Image (cartoon, rainbow, N blue to C red; front, side, top):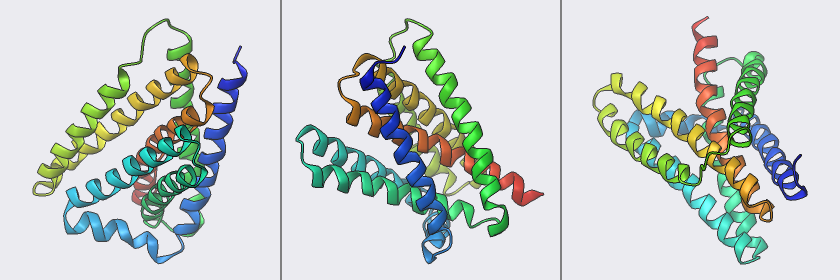
Length: 216
């Protein structure tokens, strides 16, 4: 079964995920929900870069704070990730009426948890070494930047960038779950990693769910 460090990692990640979904929903009722339109409609790549910098910067700061036992840095970095996902998710939720936002969140949550469980089964049910998958995820995210640049001029290509982003976050989630398995003595680092990866999957799935609801 799971070791204590692994359970602690999952507990930290779960708490941060629930908090971030709440932040996202609250932001959806504020002017922050309009930021997505401002960024992506101005120049699609701009939105990708801004959120990419916020997420990668927040994760870097949080991990640096944890490693150096600097609580202020750790909290600041985690807060930056919360704000980034919160604003991005709020912009997506703002595309549908408030009455159906809870439904969109619930459907997205179920799908995201299923993906996470399958990723966990892949890691814990096989003896495969997924240590290099974090690097693979970075390569995929570079592809997202490239196709987002093209998509800024040819919107039909944006679907490729979206698909790569979803795949990238799933690959990253598998890597982070592998780190939980192989380095159980680092629960805070692992918890932040799993949380960041899971929320990446969540917001990508949320876009699909909201689009389906909006079309109906």
